[in-house]
Structures are given as structure tokens and as C-alpha cells.
Image 1 (cartoon, rainbow, N blue to C red):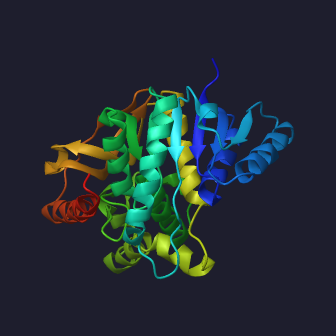
Image 2 (cartoon, one colour):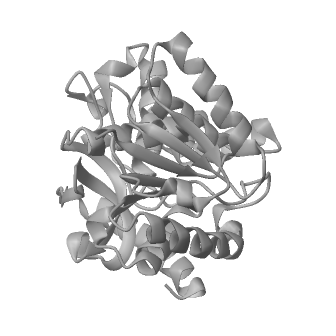
Length: 308
């Protein structure tokens, strides 16, 4: 049976995610939104691109959640985007209301799906979706670490003038100002970047990674990033649908790992057909652990506001 992925929200992130998924022939795609005409138009446009791309992905744009029935994965991007001067936290109450509505509808029609949450503030929205859905923790995953790590990788590659294929990077913690890039675990062809760059350069790249989303918002002025976030979604979808058991950083609900309990925090996860198949606990220095705890505290504060 062909795989089916629903993308909720036909704005820049959602429509671009649908584009990546269809163009990579990962699944048939349903693009859904409350705005009449937009998902239909973008979905049809994507469908008509498939012969050129030589892909047999079917793309449907709709306003009817019945069309999402029996999805293997549901990607939730719905919500208002971040604007200049607005933090991810400012989005909290509005996007929680949207999340409540969306989760109720998608789980009604796809009770066995895996949820990938992209809406901001990411960690709090993932926690909201987890509580609202009643799903097991392996089936609700926040997209954050892949994006943040990709930004770190891009900056490292440019700094050292090497292929991005040679660069691996790990970013843990919440998706925001308190994220925790880990230079010790970031490498170029297996060589730790701490052996290739001085501390000042690494600190500069770490800070740019933390500010990565805000830097793009500043340029765009009326929107936020969407190419890299949606590409990160496609990597997660592929790992799940192909049961790749790929280890990537994701926002996961922790139940004692890293000394954190009852919160979504970015950590290394093994993604496979069941969603999160394992959370990996890596050794952290006292400073790194303190930074991760600070990030978790930030998430805790947000989820406390919305009561999840």
C-alpha cells in the first residue's frame, strides 16, 4: 500500500514540505488548510509538476479532514508565523488554540499516525500535541534539532571551506535562544571542530546558530524560514517511512533521560517505522548539562502557561 503523509498548513513551511515530500517520491501527500482555495491551488500545482520531476506522488489540496484519513504521518505546520521583534514564545497562546483544533481532527481520521510538530514555539507545541492526542511518546516528535544542526553544519562548512557532506553537528535542547550546540560532538570528516577552529570562532558560530531563525526573520521582514525547516521534515519522514533507524536530534518527551522528566527537549533519537525507537543518552560535561537543564526550564515555563 502506498504511504500517505498529511501536511497541515499550506503556508510557506507546509507547502514547501509538501514539495520536498512529493519531489522525493516519499509518499502521496495531502495538503490541508482552513483557507479555501490555497491548499487546492498549491496541491494541484505540485501534482502538475510531478510529470516533469518523473515522480508518481499524488498530491491533493483540501479543506476537508476526511481526505486525511489513514495517514501514516501527519506533519503539523499550522500557526501564525514569527514576525520581526516577535519571539517564538509570543506565538504561544494563538498557536496552542490552533494545535488543539488540528490534533483533535487529525487523530480522529488517522488514529494510528505519527505526529511531527513544526509549529512554534516548537517544544511547547509538541508537548501540547502529545497531551491532546493521547499517543505514546514515540509517536509525537518535534522537528527542531535537524534544522538547528543543519544551520550549525552550514556555518561550519562555510568557515572551513569544506563540503557540508563532511560536517556533522549536534544541537540539543529547546528550539530557541537556549538551544545547546555541542562543538565536542561536531566533526569534519570525523575530526572534532575543536581541533580545527579556535574557541572564539566556535563561539561565534554557536551564537549564529542560536540566532539562525531570527537572522532570517530580520532579512525577510514579513515571515520566517521555510526551506530548511521543511527539508528537515522531509528527512524525518524518510527515516520513518523507510524504517532507516537514523539517529538525528529531535524534540522528544523525556521520562528521566538526561535527568529531565515530563518535558519535550531536543535530544538524539533513533527514528524508524515506530517513530522514536530509542532516545540516546550521550555524556555531557557539567557545563553542557547545565545548559541543557536551562533549556528544559525554559520549555517548562511555556508549558506551564498553557497547562500541558
